[in-house]
Structure formats: C-alpha cells, structure tokens
Image 1 (spheres, protein in one colour):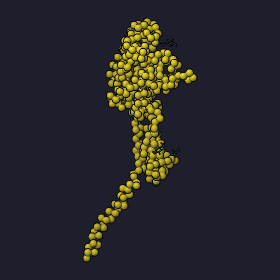
Image 2 (cartoon, rainbow, N blue to C red):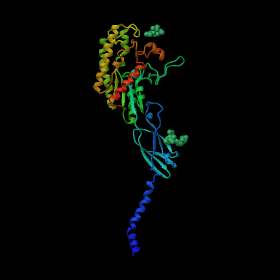
Image 3 (spheres, rainbow, N blue to C red):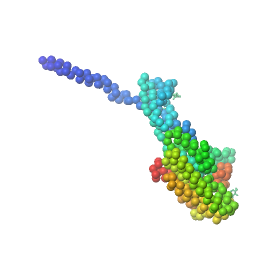
Image 4 (cartoon, protein in one colour):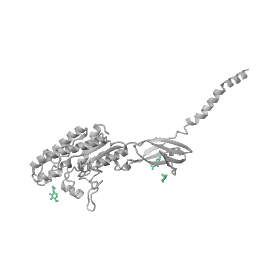
Length: 386
Ligand SMILES: *[C@@H]1O[C@H](CO)[C@@H](O)[C@H](O)[C@H]1NC(C)=O
Ligand SMILES: *[C@@H]1O[C@H](CO)[C@@H](O)[C@H](O)[C@H]1NC(C)=O
Ligand SMILES: *[C@@H]1O[C@H](CO)[C@@H](O)[C@H](O)[C@H]1NC(C)=O
C-alpha cells in the first residue's frame, strides 16, 4: 500500500521533475565559472607624443587594440562595421577608429559570431591660432649650434614645442593639439584667409564631429603693426593720429574672427593680451639698455601707452563682448621687460645666437612661455576645464 502511494506521488510530480532537470540542463553550463561570457579587452595604443598633433583629418584616428585572446579560442575572422577582415586570424586586432561615431566590432570565434559596440575615448582637444606670440617665435625646439640650424615644429611659421599652447597640452593627459599659429599672421593674411588657419581648423572640426575643447588666440599685434610702431618711434614720428584709424580697423578684424569662431561653435576661446616689453625691474619704462636702438625714453613711453596698452584694452573689451576667457599677462611682465635685469624677453643678440636670425627679438623667451602656460592651467582649473 505504501509503495503504491509512493508510486502515485511520483506520477503526479513527474512533470515538475522533468522541468527541474530540464532547467538544470539548460542553465547549469552558463552558471559555471569555467566559461565567462565573451567580451573584448579594449585598450588604446600608447601615444608616443603627448600632445598628439592633429593637422589633418587622418590624425584624428585613434589606434585601438581589441583582443579576445583571454578566451583562448580560435578566431576565423574579424569585422569592423560591415567591412570584413577575413584573412586575419589573430586573437587581437589593431583598429584605427574615429571617436566621431560608435563602431560595431564582430569576431567569428569557434564557429560563433560575437559583436560588441566600441566607442573610442575622446581626447581633450586644444587648438592654437594667431601670430608669433602663440607660435613660440624666439624659442626653437632645438637651438642653433655651430654645425646645425635651429629646429622648429614648423620652420616657415616658427612654431615651437616651447610655446605655451604646446606646454599646456603637454600637461593635460590624453590631449591633442592643432597648432596653427604662425609668425607674421594677421587676420586678413593668415587667420581668415583662404586655406588659412580657420579653414584648416574647420575641416578638422567636420572630420571630428565636434569643435576643440579650447582654442588659444593671439591676435591684433600684426594687424596694428607693431613693426611700424618701432620704426616710427625710431624716426621720432608722432604715432598718435596715424594709429586711430588702425585701432578702428583692428577692432573690426577681431569681431570678424569672433563671428567665425561662433559659427564653428567653439565654446572656450582663450585670448592673451600682449606681453609688455618696455618695463625694467622697477616697473618703469626703460629704453636705456640699447635693445631699442636710438629710441628716446619719451617715445617709448608714448608707444607703451598709446599702442601697447591701448591694444590690450581693446583686446580685453573684445574678450568681454564675445565671452572669451582672458589670460592676463600684466603681472608677469610688470617688471620683466627687455631692459629688466630679470628679462622675459628675447633680445636681438639672443635671437641671433639661438635661431640664427633676428626675428625672435622682442618676443617672450622660454621662461615666459612656461610662466604663461602655468597661468593658463591655473585658469583652466579655476573654471574647471580640466
Ligand atoms: C593587444 O592586446 C593583447 C591583449 O592584451 C596583447 O596580447 C597584444 O600584444 C596587444 N597588441 C599590441 C600590438 O599591443
Ligand atoms: C597577427 O599577429 C602577428 C604577430 O603578433 C603579426 O605579426 C601580424 O601582422 C598580425 N596579422 C595581422 C593581419 O594583423
Ligand atoms: C649685441 O652684440 C654686439 C656684438 O657682439 C654687442 O656689441 C652689443 O653690445 C650687444 N647688444 C646688447 C644689447 O647686448
């Protein structure tokens, strides 16, 4: 009797038992720690140069190592989006990917296809446009020696690794720099000209799908005509009235650049005022050290007030108007002009010695660029850019 009841009980529960063992059959292998679910190991290939210089759209591609080697299975092929890489049976694969869009990477492994969406980490993208101030004129990468000429990142533009835009990007990990500043550039001839600096930047922006995270701008010095100023005061000419019209013009030129930057949707424009070359260690305008040739003190004072300060006032006003971030160099150069005992400015003699010509004279020296780069990084931290 008892055996019979047991038998009936078993019959009633049979479907349940079957389901239980069926479930175990299906799910047990997945719960096993021996077979973790498939996944890629993704790493970016180390960047040999920080910052990476982005000059053409091809530079924007990032080398990514995608590996399935840890699963110890045999690979038939890889596929990137819908492009087959049939001949490659390696368990890891280097892809050159853009951060503009997501990519679908597929691998055929032990007869099964496995796919994963891969996003390339975005770099912190800096760009620099403008004139010799931001190109680093006066400070070649490698100074001239007896046998060899000075070396530059870019020779015609006298662009240097010692310039503040380069130094700033070196301090920001995983960053890239589009370095377009060029010695002698004006708005008309360099920044906004056809195939000029902003044209180059624009094509990179459309390739990357987003504007740079920050853009450095040094503008106005060549447009106002710093070289004319020097030559006029050397000939004891009145500089006042001649420059009124030029300031009017420069103001308009700066606006034109601002409109273009707005069109390119660049959110953070970092603008520098011009370094003061005229002050000695006591903070007084000083023409006595011979660096300015025959210029009289009164003429140098006039140039300092009527040109340099006026231009910087204009730049500050424009920065405010256009929502630009202003990096103020007044304090840095207050006692460190060319006739200061503690000068931050290249003299003509230094320029001849270091780069083999005098074009570097009256520009910030290496120490000045270092100090400016620190000032920029301080500003970035304050406004939480990095
Ligand atoms: C790619 O990653 C795999 C796994 O980490 C590694 O074995 C392989 O050497 C890497 N390849 C390169 C070129 O770095
Ligand atoms: C496969 O890996 C080997 C060794 O790491 C490498 O030499 C070869 O170029 C790789 N093949 C492809 C198609 O990437
Ligand atoms: C520059 O060098 C020349 C020739 O070596 C020298 O006579 C002159 O005094 C120097 N000028 C300055 C400002 O140091």
